[in-house]
Image 1: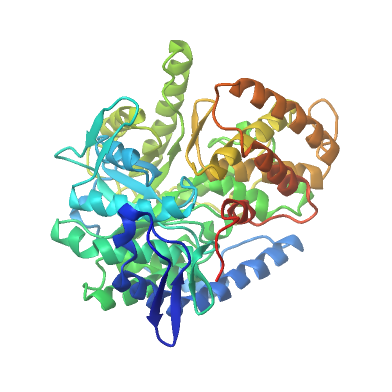
Image 2: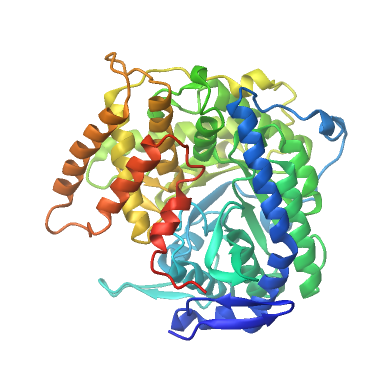
Length: 542
């Protein structure tokens, strides 16, 4: 390990409080840190302002208001305009794979046969300092083509194939901060830190190799947040002498408010836009969060909130219509299944679900889809190849779609069961335990889960308690019931781990945190905020 850094960035200093891992020390160069500092100093006040606007909007929703299409931007929605045409290596995006910025994952994903790999600093990465900085180092080596990995157990070596997927990167969202880096006495926005380091180290090299700096942008709630990203792109490109419009970004529509501003978001990013994506798991979490105070919008078991529910059908089809009208890609959602090696029948059922999901997407008009495991790439590609013989289907305008506000807000119907409650508790705690140990992409019950899993689990329990929702057997969901089930599920988790199982040293912390955010009077906006405080406990402060 090296030493903590202090970089002069007048009028104040940028301080890196924790040394970089030795192999990745070059990532925190003076030039890179000054670049990050320039962006952070220019845009942190706007991040603060936009987060304040989020809180104000949520207060209105808590008081009974619902999101809707904005009157003040009706002209943008009604006007005829298009975004910039996609660069050559983003024309065909029929299958995209996502995963954390871990070395082996990067190699396997780039070699998977998918058209695009989205390297994720957000929901599938636990933001330990080592993960964040080493992840940047791994991506720099991937761009250069020099990345290697040797499995310490098997001795097997991994390297990039001759043909690899196009790289996109997802920085963390506006609500997150990088605690280990302080500018003018306060933490730097995590999204600016992630974007700035990757762009500084790789933008010119990517361009020289015939591709470009491409990004996915998460968790936005309004077009003003997209405007902030666009202004940041303009400043970054100017600072490095890179032509305006070189950056391309796909926005994940994974909050209910953003679903009403899809046209406006595309318009803000016009010359930098690479379309929209259905971030459906976070969208379900957002529905619960947005309407947390509305007793008439209590959801059934998570397993019953499928893509066939009317509110999700309306959202995904409106996204296709909006993107195709603006001549850009409409990307489908995640298939989280993992191939099941020791149960042929269970594996067949799981893969049939993947096929059905991808068939729905391609026939709805999506131009590509997401998978979480390399083993699902051939299945998704087969479905899209059969039904989308061209590079995309932007020519399908979906003029038959006419989603109104009521369609987008329709409450999903179904039942609430003890099994569903237990599933929320078990999956939420197990995911959090792995996250606190530094793993943000976790295989649980044959699904590859990320932070959205725990968010849905704890938010749904909180909503059920808040409104005294009743289970199918007539019992009301209470804090006492949740505590009792948590004790039982913790026993099962420990028994399943056994003496030779994975580390349990953070299980109690995960259980305590999950119980707190599920049963407290105040709704925690994002689970990862208090979890990050636990993750970084003991980190030095300035």
